[in-house]
Image 1 (cartoon, protein in one colour):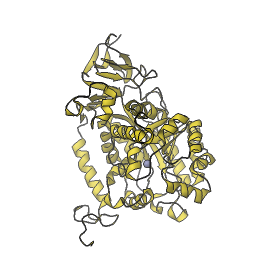
Image 2 (cartoon, protein in one colour):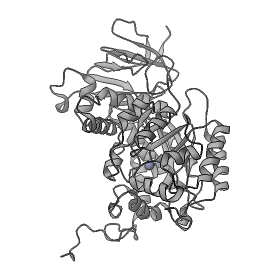
Image 3 (cartoon, helix red, strand yellow):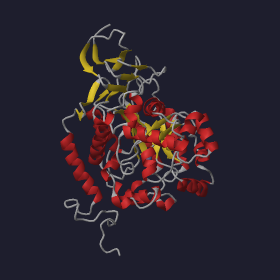
Image 4 (spheres, protein in one colour):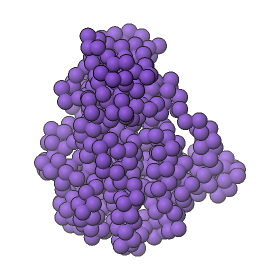
Amino acid sequence: MGTADLLVHDAELLATVDAGRRELAGGWVAVTGGVVSGVGGPGDPAPRAARRVDARGCLVTPGLVNTHHHLYQNLTRAYAPALTGGLFDWLVTLYPLWARLDEEAAFVSAWVGLTELALSGCTTSTDHLYVHPRGAGDLVAAEVAAARDLGVRFHPTRGSMSLSVEDGGLPPAAVVQDDDEILAESQRLVAAHHDPSPHALVRVALAPCSPFSVSPALMTRTAELAESLDVRLHTHLAETRDEDAFCLATFGRRPVDHLADVGWLGERVWLAHAVWPSADEVTRLGAARVGVAHCPSSNMVLGSGLAPVAELRAAGSPVGLGVDGSSSADAASLWLEARTAMLQGKLRHGAAAMSARDALEMATRGGAACLGRAGEIGELSVGACGDLAVWPLDGVRFAGALSDPVEAWLRCGPVAARHTVVAGRFVVEDGVPVHPGLAEQLAVHRRVAAGMQFEDPAAPHRSQARGGPLQRGRTDVP
Ligand SMILES: [Zn+2]
């Protein structure tokens, strides 16, 4: 056995989430050349390593996988004027602000958002960037540059909106594009950034936004393009009952019928939310192995509903977790989504229905399957990507939690990762992002976010929010 680059050893518990769901007390994992080169228990001889990390008292898991996000939305995080209604009101308030997106905004929001995710043990994230204002520049390239700067695994999607309010859609004309332009851009971005090779750091998917913002023709043509380029497909579906009503009124079809009509009912697809599929639709999604990004926090903040996660998994759909955009969720912690998914599962089906292990499984293997990377990420087995998280199980939060480290990990807390490792390299070390640029990027982020949110970005606390006056603190209301 040669010398490994990294050896994480003596874990309180190593939860491999591999095919056999092996859990090794006192376990170790070795990474060489960015790839897992060995996994073992205390009785198995560990290799020598250039770097050793003592994981005593810690749970070690695969790096978590985020299957749905809108990184740019952290520029309008917890934006008060938008929290007035459900999804549609929220979107209509925010679209005009997002129309200010440019390359600097895309870079800094991705940089900060991916750092935030890494702090929660996330090593692979997707992003659904569907706002491409005219003249905004190459927003996806800016995001990819941020991910490469940080060293995290990244699956950006080329999102799109083509159906403006003038054409019966929801978004304003300033943020929609025509179909030919969207498809040409999609093809160009796949050629520029998509890496189909094993252990790739960057892969690109295509992602028309939702039934209420793109035409059926664009959905169909995007599916054909994805087939020819062999990339994955992503969209929002069945997020709210308003969307059901929109689909029935506009297409005369329920959302999953619409999905089938446009050629999207297949394994290449993973959907965000899927809160309101009927029992029949759940069966059809599962039979077609359509993946689902479950976004429990967002679904609660926007009051969208409780997704039928257990039913979707039982029907055969791979289910992963998504933090969703930081204007709705608004924290971007995969740990928090895993915990919330566990709590929602118990709420729906009883205490035994969704264990911490089920939630860990969705946060790792489930996400990997959604992104088309089963066996490659989301598990610690020889040949998989060397992506892992080391979680502390000590201090006040864990006092007395002695019987089951995986249940403790999700039921105690909140917990941030002690170390987050991507391809054998530390992105977070001792709870702190390794990249030295965080303070500088946060300052840029504050300036860009203020410019997006306020009429007078120089004095945001005195100027009016662009989406309308703040309701809180008003004194003229009787
Ligand atoms: Zn979303």
